[in-house]
Image (cartoon, rainbow, N blue to C red; front, side):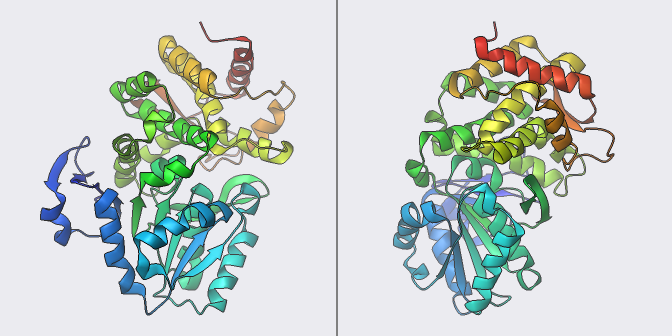
Length: 389
């Protein structure tokens, strides 16, 4: 499986190692296959306008939430006037609507507008929109084409990439879904200007995860940049996205190395689900994953000798940027129960983790045991008193 990333002036072939410059866009555009590709910058807007007319007669649908309809849709329609006749479908952009009921509302709107198997769904938004929209498209009439135009940092580097779609079930993350690749992903970093600081911070956590599972130099770059604002540059965003693309190209159905992308997510998803259930202002995905990165780095240190110095760097970076989430030991039992629903588990009696031996050397299918998991939660809780020194 070959993945491509095209920016305003460069073409990047992700079947190669690293982030290599190969062709000027004008020399390669005519030979590009849209499938499994990422486009960015001027060439992205150009390619999008070339693709849209193919679906005009069958119907084009743009899925938005209340924020992207107001802040992002106008720019999309300005850049792509061919979308002026598209059907707009709006869903609330929060986790409580990432459900089968939410998907059914989308299906109902598509039926009402006479969507057919050759129609196109454009998912314009963050991770909730791409997860739900991709699932709705992949299952409507047994599958119609869809493309992602992510508008948040988190969705640009993670959620919109890799072909995972789905919804939550009873507040448990992503329990229902299918693997289905979009025809393409279009990354336009100008949309990041519409984001509040908290949303940029959420994406920053996933970029930190990509760096930690990838290599030391990328990790150190994020430590030096030390800013959710600075990592919003197109080149940095594409570099982070390329980490996921390379891994997915090797293991689409998550039977092996793709599991490494779940580093920080076993505990992180449990905390996110817990927060969704109890907090009036729940944690964003990246905020929960930041906690998971600390806890699972601690477990990695205990199990595999992950460097304490790297744990300090990462924990202090998170502690500097992210508000500390307060919970006492009592929720530990409920968090452990939520971890039992994690999709990586192959045995209901064992909690399966993806961890690190060192920066750039992930390991998966690891079972740390309940005692060590509880210790990692206590470690995070104790960080509230100050930085890890």
